[in-house]
Image (cartoon, rainbow, N blue to C red; front, side, top):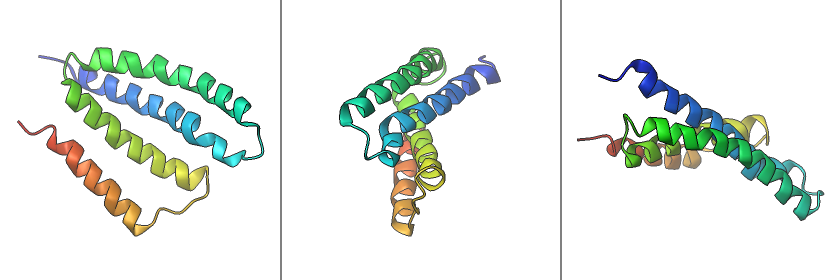
Length: 115
């Protein structure tokens, strides 16, 4: 029987990778005056660390989760990290329709776990 760690470690790695991914994909929105080529290279540099966490998360996680379940976990974490990032870093509001849309995506991701 797998340990708690076998289930939790991939989720924690996916969470951390999502923080890097969110900064790589959206962090540059605060620096609109920066040349696009600099933003691209900076994003690639940040994304490297995302991959360093994402790949082991999926490798370890596949021992206890199916690939669709890992993707579902990834999507839920992406939405949660993005919502916090949008509010905290970008200073943007999350509106009711964003919450409703995110909630529907989360429900869809949870359906993957039904057997």
